[in-house]
Length: 274
Image 1 (spheres, rainbow, N blue to C red):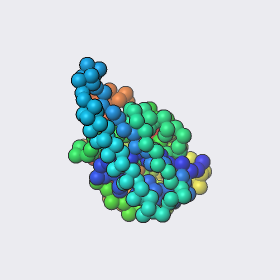
Image 2: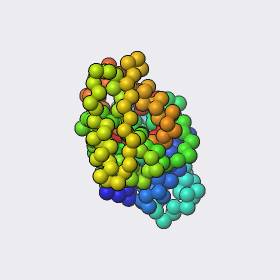
Image 3: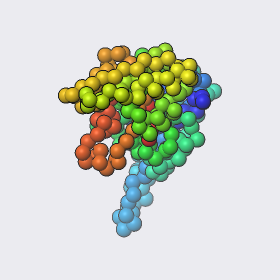
Image 4: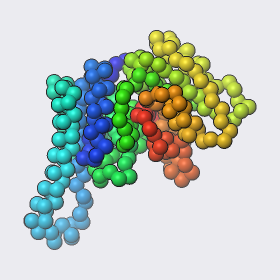
């Protein structure tokens, strides 16, 4: 398996430039083609309101939307220029539902790169969870406050033996094979359970030529998300691989869950699959 096509969700926010720079560096590392995509959602206006709008008001609205698209393209073009990737990058702008269109086009790529939701960001940013659940592709989510120094040199695999986790490891194989260090981290709050599958997935990776250290962390007081983020920081890892939404999303929204907590407090890029 190889990583040869990357779709980058581009918006007009201040965090987008670092995301695109990171995605293009990843594309360089894997000799992959990169597509920058911006989807402009036109606000739905009821017919009875639309009929009252003057031609001038419609023109002003359309110009404002076009200005947002041009700003997003400018961010992408500047990153391409800095990376010197004119021959391996392309731009695409669409109009419609951002999540649906990005998910649909993402199915023709090996990886989708999106941004963590920035509470202070612009309105045209995507919600990455929507892509994780609907695209059928791995989604690499980049923090909104991020200054990268490495691109997958030390990867932590957050492993819990789940279907989603297995999917994430399979999807991340090109990144794992290109990394310098891989740590399989198993987090278990139940101290009576010690037979966890960290060694089995490490053996599976070894058969692919990937040397991975299996680490079992037990914490009876901290939430698993906090344990994961603390370990990522302590180990100096620069990327996390994990499954997303092992429980129904509605339950996570109501009760809280590891996926939501990680996406709120992430400090390094996270490759997530469902």
